[in-house]
Each structure stands twice: as structure tokens, then as C-alpha cells.
Image 1 (cartoon, rainbow, N blue to C red):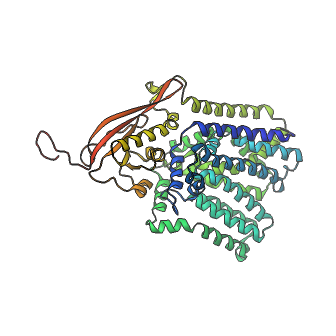
Image 2 (image 1 turned 180 degrees about the horizontal axis):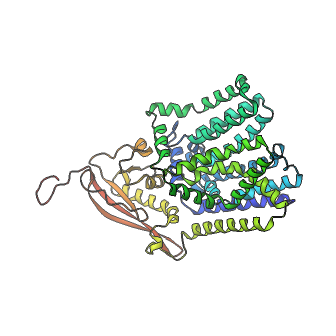
Image 3 (image 1 turned 90 degrees about the horizontal axis):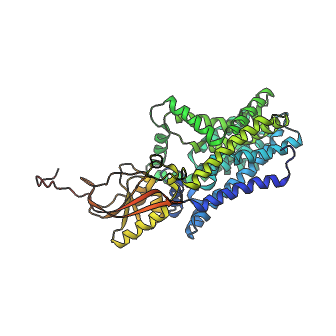
Length: 500
């Protein structure tokens, strides 16, 4: 690691790409992946729960009918670019941090940046499945790079670049406002209020606002439902410390103790050296992380939301670990590396075997198997569409949107109705199920619901098929298919002959 040869860098990148390509071909789509691919399939200016970029970027491949594994090359490319940009930032931080200027140490830091990303388990999830956070990771690093340059020698082209990046970030995810806040604080602290009397910041703001106009246009046509949803979704419920503590524990496992160690060492070094600019750049990590951590207490955050923040910390952590390695703290760092490698290998193994090997869904440990969520949806969607055509029904129905996203993608162009009271994107796409209609209702063993019969539901549902999803000789889940008739029928009581 002291003088890393070029092949070591490309070796690390190659290992990551091989892992992502393998699982990209092996696994069916996750809940969110399918949802965002439907964004591309049903292209629009924006959507109920997110801005449109995650759909727009997939549209060229979706419109030509590319296989899922080919569409998944998009997040893999974004992961590769993020690794290279994190490495470049790690190489350049010596400009603002005293003590990180030795050439050999800088080269080692570049390699550590890639290694930290490769050893962070959740980074692989974002590299296989395209989420808004995958886009925001690359954009956050790009914003960090531009902000560093603007803090040193601002000029007009950099301001234009900043505006374009902020606009793209705003088209990717609403939480892009957090790195934008970091940028404002950093540049004002660096240049003072006089910065506001120069044209650069206002040009950047104007360009960013122009780029995000599609989001506002769509929301204006839909009663601003996205903003209302995001505010309610982020707020969560009653704040509880146990949720906050659980969030911190999950973050430690998801991104790895080595990155936490590197972040701590980097922060300590920057404070000790009084590197003000470098310390302010750490706001790219601290602002989004602390906001998300606070929201976790109300149940309003998910582990991958902090992915862009952790990636912004990587260049700093990489330099600190390179310095720590030069100071001969090899044993501690190796222990952390082994710990993270074991976490990654366990995760990869559970994905490949779909949970614990030999444990089927009939076992207590297999009844709630999170890894079964990534298997069999293509077969289930095809079978549901086949039954809809065979029984001359024009729709499929499920009880939850997390089931609907995969079912809609794999049974397209058949309509899929979500039979719940929650308003979401599927209501915008398909509306309410028409009264009196029949539908193929699909139940999944890992998220089973009662049949939607009774007053206000279907008159009756009859089982027509079952699909067992097997992996390496054991059943990990199954799908049940029902022919349900006469939605919204009033059920007549046999005893009294009256409606209940």
C-alpha cells in the first residue's frame, strides 16, 4: 500500500465490477429498482415519490427492451466513475490539509479510496441496483470537487459547472438540498459575504433552477403531492432513541468500521492541524448524515440514504488511513480490513444461496427471509400475465406497492392495481380498479395478505395456481394466484338474505 502499482488499482476495480455484473445477471429486480425502471417505461416530467432523473437515465435502454442485467450496467458505470473520482479527490486533498503532501502517501491514499468503497457492503447494493442515491453519490463527489476548486480560485466556468451539477442533483433526489446547504456554508465561510455581490453564485443558482423546472412543473399539475409526501415521509413518527441507536449500528455494518476509523482519524488530523477549509468540506458528510440520523429516531430514514455522505467522506478517510499505515499501525488496519471483508463475503454468500444454505421457507428461519425478495419475480410476473390473458381479465392485483413494482415490471403491459388505501404512484398510473371487474390476485408467501373479499372487495376468489421458487434444491418462497371476481360487489348474507 505504500507504493501501489497501477495493476493493484485496476485489480480492485475489476473485482468490484465482476461482483456487480455477476449479481446483476443472477438476481431479479429489487422493489425500488423495478419501481424506477417503471419510471423509464412510463416516462414523465417527474413522479410521486422522486424526481425524474433515475427514470430518464434508464429510458434509452428500457425503450429498446434491454434485459434487466444490461440496464443494470448503468449503476455499475456510476460506481466505477465514483471510485475514480473519489481516488482523484484523495490525491488532491494535500492542497488543503497539511501533512498529507508526501507523494507516496498520496498515491496510497488514492488506492485506499477505492478499497474503502469496495469494502463497504451497502455500496455494492447501490452499484447493482440503480437508486436515486446511486446518482447522488457521483454528483456529491463532483460537487465536492467543484467546491474545493471554487474555494481556491473561483472563476465563471466553475460556477456554471456548479449550477449544472446542482440542477442534476435536484433532478435526482430531493435530499440534494443538503449538499447544496454545505456548499453555501463552505463558500461563504471561505470568501465572506462579498461573494454574494459577484455574478458567479447567481448564475449557478439560475442554471440549477432552470434544470429542476420539470419537477416543479409536474408538481404544480399534481397539487404539489411530491413535496407533501416527502415532508410526511421524512418526519416519521414519535422519536425513539432505540431507533436512532439501531440506525447507527446498521450504518456501522453497512459501510464498515474501517471507513468509520478513517473518518475519525481524518477529522482528528484536520482539527489538530487547524485546516479550516478541509474541515468545512467535511460538511458534505456531517450535514446529510446528522440530518438522516436524526430522522431515523422517528423511523423516517433508510440505510442507503447516507450513501452519498459516506462517499464524500471516503477521500478524507483514505488519506488518514494511508498516513496511519505509514506510521506502522498495520495490525489494527488489517483487523478492520478482515472484519469488513468477512461482512462482505457473508452478504454475498447469503445472496447467492438465498439465505442460510439448506433452510427452506418451511423452516422458522426461512419464513421471513429478506434474500428471497430477489428471486422469482420474473417467473411470477409472467405467470400472472398468462392467467390474465387466459381468463380474459385485463388486470393483476396485489395488496402492497412493494409487490406491485416487480409485478408491474415483469407482467407489463398488463395493469396492476394496489388494493390498499394508500395513495401512490400506482394510483397515478392505473387509477382505481373498476367496479365489477375481475382480476388475477397474487399473494407472496414472504408477505402474505388476506384475500381481498367481502364488502367493498371482490365477491369471491378461487385459487388457480401456485408457483414455487426454488434455489439449490429448496423452496425459498411461493406465489399463489387467484381468480377474483366482481370487485366492489355487495356480499349478501346467506342467513338473512340481507346485505351486511
